[in-house]
Length: 332
Image (cartoon, rainbow, N blue to C red):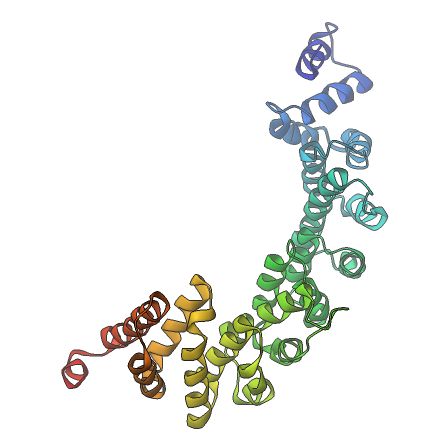
């Protein structure tokens, strides 16, 4: 008998109102149902205090198959019933499972619980979420920390930039904190962690790239540039290109010329999205880049690589020209 069939049997059994136990069993079936699960959340809320033991039991269940939707529904019902204490207990007691499938499902539920606590502005949950984020970088927990808009979250959010899954949530949370986090982002961008091979670790590189992108978005100052100017000569082409783009909006004239020259030289080494961004940056600063664009075009020889470089450089000039007012175009 399927779960839906069992629920239907429980729902029609007896001629009077269902007993509490039977009603709870039916509700549990419906919360697990693909068809009726979302509607069952409303019924659980309508049932009120009688539904709490069932919801708590469902929330704390372990599911080795990684199925998390029923437990997420329990979170929604508990949040609607204004019972953050159960959600705090769940987040506090949670530990990552050894099995990756089970852990993935658990993380989805923990993230939903964390977001519900943040949405309810549960201030007592904030230190608990910080402790959880230190132990394990669950994207939903990182997102919840960002919702509190507290500057003291910055170190945890910056650390989460290293994580492939949590980085997006961490970047959004850091954007919301605004220019007040320029200093820690600058420190992060300038600090590389090396592995046993002597090269930078992939997680360190992800963290620094994110920090540089955020500095560009948030509007870095001249002081920031002076601390990061050395990154223009980084061996990592993407980090160097981001540093050049940062310099083209923050450095003095001489620094902008240096960044433009380096960015032109980096074009062949960048992937498509980064090269597009570099072209836009050079076009917006053609007053400093024109000399190096022309030199690179003049030095181009026959061959597929040079042809591609020439095409990219001509595109830079075309973009700059298109951005000029008509009177200025006639002078070019």
